[in-house]
Length: 520
Length: 97
Image (tube, rainbow over all chains, first blue to last red; front, top):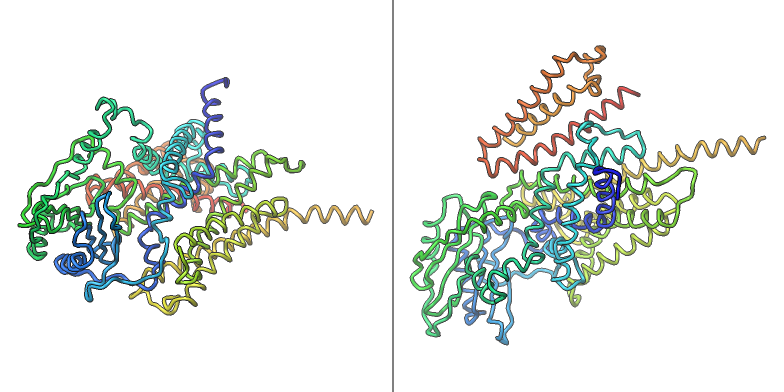
C-alpha cells in the first residue's frame, strides 16, 4: 500500500500508462488517421476522381438499374449517393439471405454509363481505420475485446494522471525545452491538459462502444437469458424492423417519385447518406432512408417508405437511452464534422498521440543515469519506444508506398499492402534494437523523413496526379497529401538535425577531455 | 471564418491568463522592467482572460448552436492553449539567452 492517495495514483498512472501505452499509441495514430479514412481511400484509388454531385434521382436511377441487372433477387440493396466526403462515388452493395449460395457484393458505379468503376484492389483507409478498434491478425471479437480493455486503461490513466500531475494546474503554460528530462514531462503535461476535454470525451465514448461486450449480462438478464428476443428488440430499436418477403413479385416504385418523396420528408440542408431497399421486387418491399448527421445530436431519424407506392410510412423516434448512446458514438466518430471541425479533431488526436508518446519517453528518460550504462530493461523500453513511436509512422508510409508499387494484378493485393505495413514495422523494431546503444532516435528520425519523402516521389512517378502534375483547383486531395507529407518530412528532418547537434554537443566535452589526458 | 475568430479570442484569453502569472510576465517586452505585476493587475488579467474565453463560447453558440458549438469550442481551446504555451516558451528562451 502506498503512503497516501496521490502516491497510489502516481503508481497506477505509471503502470496503467506504461503497460498499455504502445498499443494506445497505435490506437491514437490509426484513430486520428481514421478522421481521414475517406480521403486516404481516395488517395489509394488514384484511378478514380470524385464524382460531381447531381440530383438524388439521377444517382438512385443509375444504382437501381445496375442492381436490377446484377442482383435482382438479393434480399437487401444498399445505395450510397455521391454527395458527401464519405461517398466520393456512387456506391451500391447487395446482400443475400444467410443460407443462400450466392455471394454478396459491392461496387462503385459510373452513373453516366451505368458500368462498374474499375480501380486497383486496395486495403484503403478503411482497413487502417478498422485497426483502430479491431487491431489486425486477430479474430475480430478478440481484437474488439482487447481494445475495450486498453480503452479502460486509458480512462484510468487519464483520471489518475490529473491527480498525479497536479503541478500541471499550477504551471499551466510551462514548457521548458532546455530542461532535459523535465522538458518531456512538460510536453506530456501540456499536450494532455490542452486536449483534456477531447481525451475524456474520446475515451469515455470509446468505452460506450464496448458497453455490450464488457457488460453483456445487464441486457441479457433482463430477457431471462433469451439472447434471440433481445437481439430482435435491439434490431427494432435501431430501426431494422423485420419485414418478411411476401413471395409475390411486384414492381419497385420509380426513382423519381421516391426521390421527390424523400426530399419532401427531410430537412432542406440534410443529405441522404444511404438508402436500404429490403425485399426489392416483392410485394412487401420497404425502403429505409438514412441521412448524414449535421451535428452530434441526431436530428433526423430513420425514415421508412413503402417499396411499391414510395409513400412515407413512418419516421421512428428513438428512445432516450439510445439517443444518449448515439450522441457519444457520434461525438467519437465525428462523422458530422465539416472540414474545420475535422481539422480540430485531427489536431486534438495529434495532441493525444503526443501525450502518449512523451509519457512513454519520459518514463524511459527519468530512469536513465548519465554515468551508468543502460540496464537490459531500460534497453527493452527504449527499443519498444523507438520501434513504436517512430516505427509506426514509417510503416504507415510503407503501407501507402506499397499501394503504388505492388503489381496491380497481384493476388490478394489488399492483404499484401497490410502485410508490407507490418513487415516494415517489424523492421523498425529490428533497426531500433540494432541502434539502441548508439543514437537510435537520431537514426530512426532520419529513416522516417526518408520514408515520408518517398511517398510523394513514388506517387509522382507511378501516377499522373503527383506534385506539379495536378493543381490545387482540380485535385485538392492529392496536392494536400503531397504538401502534408513533405512538411512532415521536413519536420522530421529538423528533428534529426536537432538530435545530431545535441549529440555533437554531448560528445565534444568527452573528446576534449580525451585529448587533454593524451597530452598529459 | 468564425473558427478563426474563436481561435484568436481563445488565444488572447489564454495569453491574458498566462501573463497574470509573475513567471510569464517578463515575456511582454515593454513591461518586463517591472519585476512583478501588482496584485490588481494580476486579477485584472485573470478576469479579462476568463471573459474572453466566455466570449469565445458565446461566439461558438451563436454560430453553431450548443451541440456543434461546444465541439468547436473544445477543439479551439485545445489548440489555443497549446499554441500560446509554445509561443510563450519560445519567447522565454530567447529572452533568457
